Image (tube, rainbow over all chains, first blue to last red; front, side, top):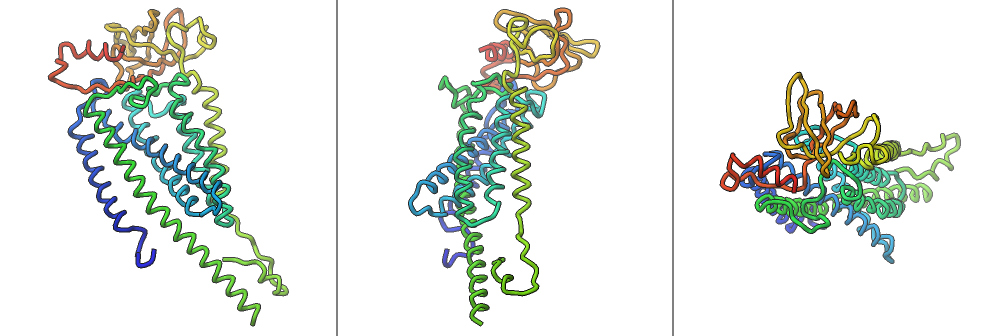
Length: 244
Length: 162
């Protein structure tokens, strides 16, 4: 980080510009070029944010679990893995929240209600609560290694909810429709430009996630370094007092 | 940054007060309570959210005059509105059910679309006070060159029925 004034590098700046361009293209495709749905009308456009949001959350929580597993199984137990896990967890929670809010808006317009306690919505709410708890556990105090150990175990347990959420619409009877792309029949149920806009959304949101994680884990590294420096200063002060 | 050994050498000094991080603890407790509520809702409501029309009086939990949710496809030309209410016929697996809804259904309610009606059976009619439109996983572009106005309704119906 020497010679750097923030958490950005030339690579992240280039990635950031690319993300902005991708999101602008998504806005054009989603709001302008793609047609209305024959039943939903313009409400379908919410899908271009809703689906990429939950997709990104799945990736985020997957990365959280992966880094947690590497941290726990690695010989040197580098805290970098824990910081990436924490950063991905934070961003994942943000994207689940976006997915819940946009889904609720879509539900009001299509189903006629903001919320129902069906299998998909209930399991997604549970996923959200679980990872809010994960983030709270990370803040409980103790050393960085204590934080890393307990949150890694929790992350490895929480990831088991993802298949439950994704397959909830096939496992149980749900108001929420089954997947239109990643379904068991491997049949894509979207017309051309709708599918393209959705795919564009998935790519754009994934790139946005990568950009956010890169910055957040670097910010976390600075926070940890600041905390360690405070400890070093306090220990030095005590030693000086003892020696005086 | 507090390192507790200092106070042990200071006679008369107050013992250090260990700072607890209450906010994360409260969030963890709230998450556990929230999780408990959600699991309860899941067990009572989310599993088998509805009965299909052909399961009424046949499947456990779908019989009698108890309150239930019924899923079926709105039969073509069956919607009638009047006296502040809406009546229509639900169709599923060649079984039909007459529904009387006290109001104007919201969402994208229309013929040939799957819906879930909340209510209870009264004299062979399902009296409903809530309708939820169950959208399929098919997304079809509204395309003027492909679907003209005269057959749009029929096309939508065939799409939704699969």
